[in-house]
Every structure is written in structure tokens, then in C-alpha cells.
Length: 169
Image (cartoon, rainbow, N blue to C red; front, side):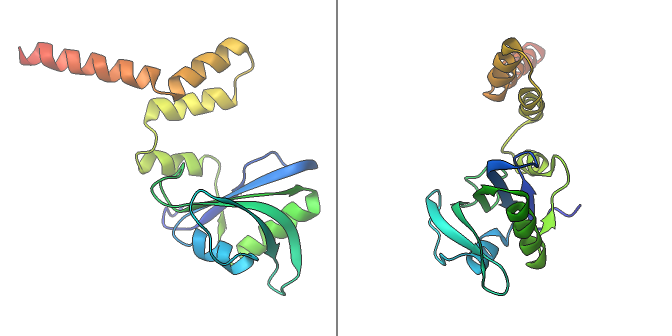
């Protein structure tokens, strides 16, 4: 795993659905999306109705595409989200096109790892994100969301500061 690679992942579960979401992150994400899109100029944080093309210039799918400029993204890097139709054929074709253009499929948790390494999340928020994804009950969801919003991080930081002050005194 090289953190300099531009990577992609299907963020929604595999299987037939109305919508599937791809995420792309890394230095080449903006360049790649311009290369395979009907739009050639993306504005940060603006979602566009867009066509994704294959290398032979045939349309793969009509998508909603959003570009996030570093550092204002989940990972802290340039990032793109593509919301496409969720058929097996569309998912497979877009995946192949991204690989053809030099992107690497992300390993599990690699987007979150980049967010941690780029100081977008701390370790307690990473754990909270995993808890939120795996929540089965309302209480688990509430607790995980509170921790993702910083409740545990703030508590720990406050406690640490109090302990440092006690030691200093």
C-alpha cells in the first residue's frame, strides 16, 4: 500500500441497486475525472450531471460527480465521488476504466487510514466510524455518532490537559 497512489473504491455494497457510489482520492483524482468525463472543468464541492466515458469514447453511464479539493475532503486529499447507476455492468465497467487510467483499488479501510494520517480524524473518531458502520441498535448508533462528532476525543483531551496541569503544579 502506497499512500502516494491515487485509489478508488466502491463505497456502496456490491449488488444490483438504483445507485452505486465510487470514491477516488489522491493526487491524480482531479486529472483522471476530467479525462473520463463529459465535463472538463470541475468546481470544488459542486455536484454536476456528468457522463463517464470509456477509453474508446463510448458513454458508460450518466452520473452525478462531485470534486472535493484538498484539504476539504474526507481524506484531506483531492477527492472525487461518482454516483452512478448500480447495475453490475456499470460498476464493472467504471472499475475497469479507473484501473485502465492508473488508479489502484483501495484496500479495506484505506480511505479512513488516509483521513487519520492527514489529521482529518483522530484514533477515537476512526473507531467511532467503524462502530457507526457496524451499529445494529439505536443506542449503538447514538453512541458511535456522538464519538464521531468528537465527544470522546474532547473528553480525553480535556482530561489529559487537567492531568498535565496537575503534574505541572
